[in-house]
Length: 144
Image (cartoon, rainbow, N blue to C red):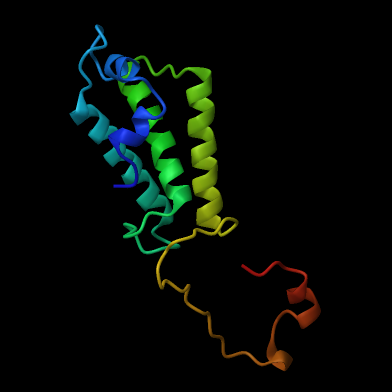
């Protein structure tokens, strides 16, 4: 798991969480619904990042934990509001989490705590004299 109920309870009071998980009285938190939201957030994260990192993560990087929590909270609101309306602050948080996922996927952000994982090195068989692009042009690009 990339996040958990206890971390979500740091964002909400138990009464608030009980209400958005389906109990209008605010007494009982539907833990199955919370777990479903967390699992769906994990699936989205894994689908975005599996082309760059081995997923699922054994040790969860702090940024992945943050993204999972944001997405799980957005999922809970989406399940609660079946009309598709998200409060503006939750919509912004979800949008930012998705932005971070795209940045990680594209290599603009790097994750910490990913164990001994080393991205593979690309090996080519071209010599400087038979390249299509010369070294000056290649040096103008940013290396990932």
